[in-house]
Length: 404
Ligand code: TTP
Ligand code: MG
Image (cartoon, rainbow, N blue to C red; front, side):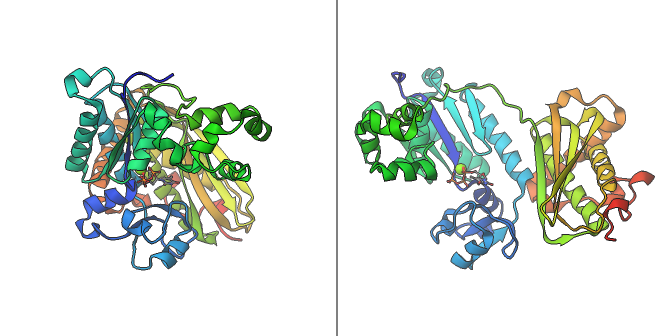
């Protein structure tokens, strides 16, 4: 059932990673910006600014293809710490309006403003104010959708992109919504779209009006969910402000050229741990396990896990544990294609600061994070020797990693 009022807001940043880059580097504003790995590598596009989208560049496209479509674009490697820091500030901003905030991803959230409209005004006024504040504080635009439920709000923000504000009412379900292609309904992916098209069902109107036996024959019990979608009702729960803690958090990299160079593997490992730990701290978390992932050029993949004596947000003990895992891997002459780390057994940060030296390390790490959030990930790096003075971790060719 619909609530009687339009009180759900869906807020989604426009071209988030690219917009953050344009905000902090004014020379990029108005230019096509593509965030992903460098062209010529095996990477894909994480996102593209709307200027680049005009040339057909899309998320998940190989960067090599993006470069063909838009050769004059500025290609940037992502700076996740900076995006995560903006994310945290955005969530704080949303919570100024209501505590019923459901964070869906790094750049989008639902707000249930039903309880705060007397103080903050109608939903549309709240949405406009949020757009202004996001722009004033972060220099980026967002789209706002307003609906009586999450699905309609999310559809409305999608239709309002970029930088717009839109509403979808119950009346629209029997009007404007009917004209849209089925693919615009969230939850309908390419496969379902193709199956619907095969049945001749290409628009929301046709999906609303399709005989149920036809849908049931093709989709079984999924027919009911499809029909609900067509009428703007999601089977999703109401806005839930419960903060979800990720189960794990990781980072991995595919080498441009497969390698067996121990120094290179250790340097890469340090970079991966360092960046994953920054993300962990931005989320206010500490990790107790670290898992090393290694894929050989044969695509055979191994993982090795270590458990730390306590959950920590400090980079050094986690890197030490990961480096020990790497040291014990026998390469036997094989080349490494991919290296990754994953942090697990995550706890809220307050669990960790029990030891003085951990506290000092964490303060140092947090200073690094602040510099990164302000000036970019590459603004400050770590030398393995400086980070890891203990004899066990002096840079050396890892026994198990040397090419034989
Ligand atoms: P989205 O909100 O899906 O995309 P967007 O903000 O870039 O563009 P839009 O204006 O259409 O909302 O995702 C938010 C960020 O998450 C995006 O900037 C980059 C990142 N991302 C990936 O890295 N890989 C992906 O496959 C997707 C979908 C997003
Ligand atoms: Mg977005």
